[in-house]
Amino acid sequence: MDWSGVNYKDAMVSTPGNRVARISPLVPGVDLAGTVLATQTQDVQVGQSVLAHGHDIGVARHGGFAVLARLPSEWVLPMPDGLDARRTMVIGTAGFTAALSVDELERHGLLPGSGPVLVTGAAGGVGSMAIAILAWRGYEVVASTGRQTEEPWLRGLGAAQVISRQALEDAPGRVLGSERWAGAVDCVGGDTLAKVLRGLRYGAAVAASGLTGGSGLETTVFPFITRQVALLGIDSVLTSRSRRQEIWHRLGDDLQPPDLESHVDSEVSLDQLEEPLRRILDGRVRGRVLVRPG
Ligand SMILES: NC(=O)c1ccc[n+]([C@@H]2O[C@H](COP(=O)([O-])OP(=O)(O)OC[C@H]3O[C@@H](n4cnc5c(N)ncnc54)[C@H](OP(=O)(O)O)[C@@H]3O)[C@@H](O)[C@H]2O)c1
Image (cartoon, rainbow, N blue to C red; front, side, top):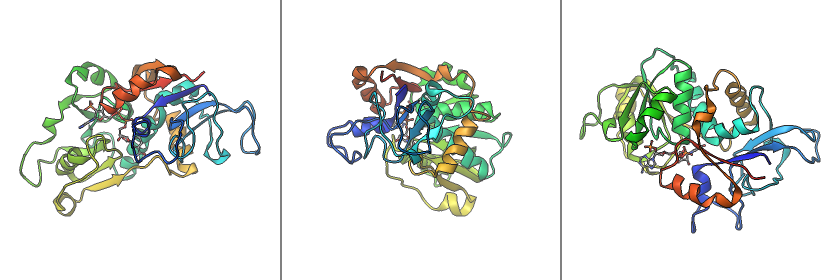
């Protein structure tokens, strides 16, 4: 294995008593990239550069925090043109989820020039990748973060404006806020997602992928029935193989943000994992932590 990365789910499965890991003991690591050493099928070739993420990897089957991994060949993807093992893991599950979110918003009708697009959880993995991808495609990106100190970095990624978590709410106590967002990428969930729904413009959509702010969702039907907004669910685990390949192809091409290295928070070896796993749970990782297993 050449590279893996630290994702929020890796921290969840590493927490004692969690209900996410489905085997024990478990080697975490929901994504990985490397070179095929042996194969029993024709689907992949020895020496081929590949990546894998999602499915049961790092949850019900040993994952990327290891020197070697053994996976069903149908879960393994050829390295996309325009990327290598390190770059795919800088993007990782977080970046794939961000790209899937942008792609789903565009399928729903979002276009550059539509208006401000909100990204919540901005300084984390999904959020920071979403900012960079959207800005690269010409969108006006508004980043919402609990870490105002990261404003210069977020602006460097392409955010036109950086707002606090509190500023998401512009009409507290009202069922609807003003129509602010032409679209939104939300990986925070909970109360944040409810606030995002209240601030979407007529006909706009939010792509929702995460739960760092909570798994509950208390809302009213008004955003849906008076503003025709859409809540688009984003799942990277069971994405079909063809859709996975399509998104990775785009990540090697038109969705690939410039300066991927600026997303790297740090690089760790297998015996240095404890600290970033704790930090990601506390919402203190900036961008992506890379894992070098060898
Ligand atoms: N659906 C899928 O397939 C899929 C795939 C990948 C990830 N996810 C989920 O997406 C979420 C983000 O993953 P990630 O890898 O990007 O994690 P991450 O790097 O930790 O980023 C999450 C961000 O959420 C914000 N945050 C943390 N705690 C918060 C709180 N209590 N209230 C409000 N905001 C909070 C922080 O951003 P700021 O400091 O900037 O506010 C943090 O950086 C996780 O829930 C993960 O499980 C889902």
